[in-house]
Amino acid sequence: MTYLILIRRPFRFVIVTVLAVVALGLGGGRYLAVGSQDTGAIRHGNPNRPEVALMVNVDWGEEYLPAMLDVFDSKNVKATFFIVGRWARKNPDLLRQIAARGHEIASHGDQHKLATKLSDAELEQLISDGVSTLKDITGNQPAPLFAPPSGDADRRVVEAASKHGLKTILWTLDTVDWKKPSSAVIVRRAVERASAGALILMHPTKPTLDALPEIIDGLRRKSLEPVTVSQVMQP
Ligand SMILES: [Zn+2]
Image 1 (tube, rainbow, N blue to C red):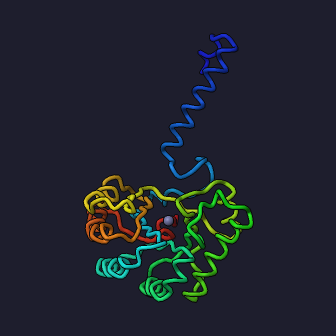
Image 2 (spheres, helix red, strand yellow):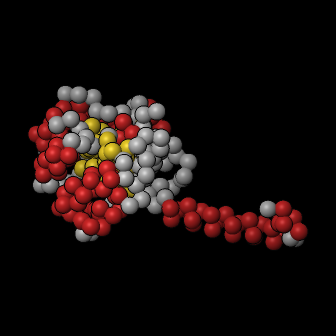
Image 3 (cartoon, protein in one colour):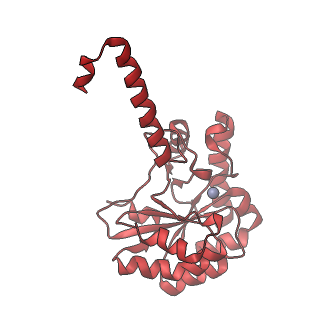
């Protein structure tokens, strides 16, 4: 920005400040859930793999999960389920069933609380209790991934998760299915902009269940195989 040198010094400051505010505004709009663009959280898998990951965040919606599992089975797809600890304690049999049917299980926090708003001690609890609950119920260590509730993560959250060996996972494409749009809208959001390595976020809802077969078929028509988050992150 060499042209700034031509502008008198007091005005340079004003212009630089305005540019910075505009840049922050643009960044904030693109990364809605996250304060910083450089937190170390993961938003994408390996773009060299002809795959995408389907992530199902679970804090409610258990009434739709059995039928979603049937769709995954019928299409021979394994997804990653990010499970909230409090939900797991209320639905232990369903959690064991998700695991038994070969899906990847990882933590979505022990409670569905905004991680950046918690004290260090509360954040530690959110992460460690979330993982230990899943391990206690399934008998297996969950995948070393952490999807922060509401995608709320900053550098402190990412570092706290990393102390437990967990990678913090956000998403590439959000179906925003929790707002219950039509299943056609959910299919479009999941498939249209999907490209290799994308992490596609969904939840257990009725329109998501209805959309799921077409999402899987649509991705496969684009030669993108739906897999787990761990798999799409492999080199
Ligand atoms: Zn959630």
